[in-house]
Length: 180
Image 1: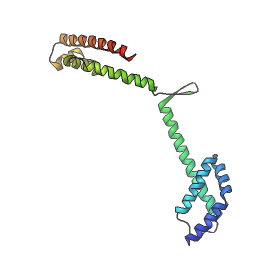
Image 2: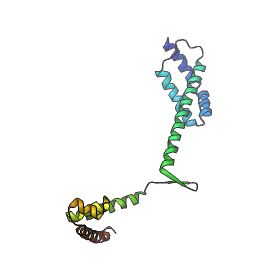
Image 3: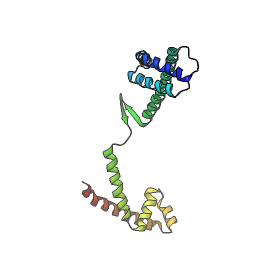
Image 4: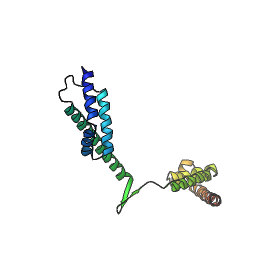
């Protein structure tokens, strides 16, 4: 019985192509989306459960097209809201222009290269000076706290910091010429 119903629906589907496309285009305001929905209607007809006794195939096809258009419109509204939220959280407005908060690719590359040079400079420090420098500049510990942790005097911490800063400055200046 469903084969007969499918045959009737497919005949009507093909015969109503232009009418359904106009209906969908008017409903969605988008001819390309209407074409997509028309094709989805075919897929649903072929794979869906069809009623055993179909008295109005044209009405059935219009109802299916209407429901698919509503599903499409809801999905588009959700997508647009999600995209608007994403744009709002990842950009800022300057007048009417939307400016991305992301760093430009060349700036990101330059930053990565500078970080590589700094890491090499840190690696070239003597172990104790590197440890003192990291505790002070990275971890934010005071000279007194570093002295307590390492079991050395505050004056020794200051000497390690001075040596580290001097070494890093010289190292970074010497590599600056290589990068340009």
